[in-house]
Length: 463
Image (cartoon, rainbow, N blue to C red; front, side, top):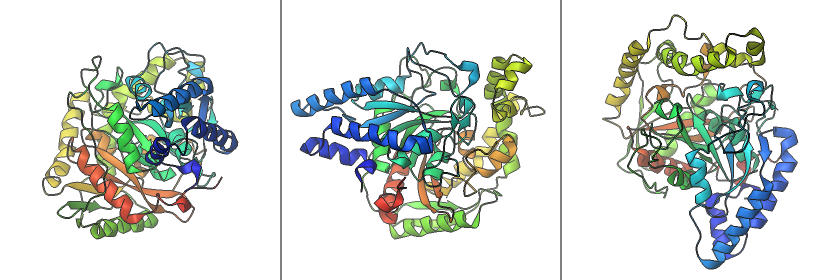
């Protein structure tokens, strides 16, 4: 594996042995960013001076035996997560020049754990799309095939990991925003269950929404997740229980997995189906019992159930920003404008809550018989980097992530499943029972070892 695609676990071992220093690795990462950014455009700003200061502190700590959990590991932050005194523009001309007054709790934890935060990553405007392009930051491209999008909204995070520009990255997910880029970019991402990771108002109270971890291996995602999870005094929704995830590779003997290809009636590309079936065979080889199943869901039901929620939260927030002013509305990206009024004619919020309960029931009953559900992440094999994505119904008919935001208390680990003929990776979601995070990491670690795809140097784009 090339130095640019080291894992965080490998880097920690090299730091401990003295074969590599945090300053040396940071220097390599900064050079890599300079080389690939003209091609992928995934970084909003670098934090080079503070990163070198952190890397030098990490060198000192390794010498003195006081290393912290993420000591010296280069990491990029999703720009949507605020840092006090730094810009918080969210890819929008409406917020150009905005400065954050508070720092997100996960950033405070990442810094305290010794990570070297060296840049921030692009998002679509207001993280409101499954592609990553905006009037403010331009178009972010997929390192595996630059004609295609890395996905969204954590598209910059997925792109920098695939490009080898960093070792760890943060993301957030309200409709698939961690899992979609993980699929398109061939990396690993985790949507924690609601409350596992603390957040900031108002989205800390949104059961669809979660901040989470992205990396190139299951173990690296667990490493970051163990730092950012846990209660926070300013978030009443944050869970008191503090899990410590184990991503060791073990046998799946006795583990029962439901393999679902279409989640009802999603129109899934044959290449995605083939790669998902290959995942099923790999899980069997790892010792699991795998059974093909179906769920009585439909795309129409997903759209009907999500709309009152999105209309009440994202749609209304964007409408408030635009204030009905035609000039302000014109400054918004088309995909942002599409969310305003998208809930017209939808059921009311209370009826939406009842619909969410009905939606969960068949999944909950299935997971009484199975330890986890595995299904595709995205139905298609890629979108053009500049796809407008201005029809929300069409967008959410292509991505298979929203069902697990509707039932936001389930943990979901996204891992690659293979590659489409256009060079864009495909992926699967490993869905656990409510708050059973450990099982999805056990399944993911075993699958990663059995498939040996994204742990190979050949997996990553040369750029």
